[in-house]
Length: 151
Picture 1 (cartoon, rainbow, N blue to C red):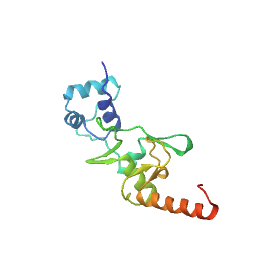
Picture 2 (spheres, rainbow, N blue to C red):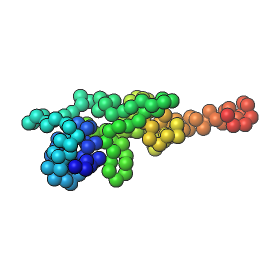
Picture 3 (tube, rainbow, N blue to C red):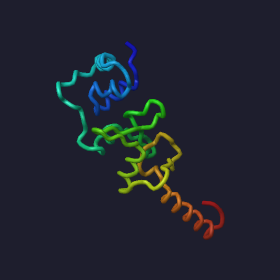
Picture 4 (tube, rainbow, N blue to C red):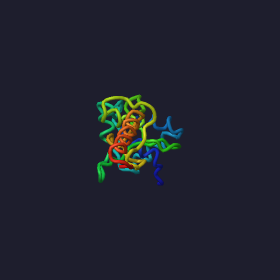
């Protein structure tokens, strides 16, 4: 059986029941069940809902540290956009938004960019919002005034 990656990712994330996965992806419940079996995953217990204790726990369960402080997302991605999403109970939070909040202790202001240049990195320290980018521009300007020339 050819395993559909979108179904496999949602099953591995452990946040949704098989019925919810089928509804979300518009597939037959039997397709989800067959995918679970093909992956060698145990059948869910009746009435049991797989879940993490918190949004942060769900995030931490699906990240993998890399070299140079990078963090890679191993969890669910939206099928069309490829956007990394943390699924926790009924919440769907973009990974960059949550990684930023967990690292800086506040929500991002404006657009979140990857300051490290790696578009798929989700290390909180490698993310920047409007406030951080403005502070960096001020620091670069001060450096140029003091030392003459770009850093």
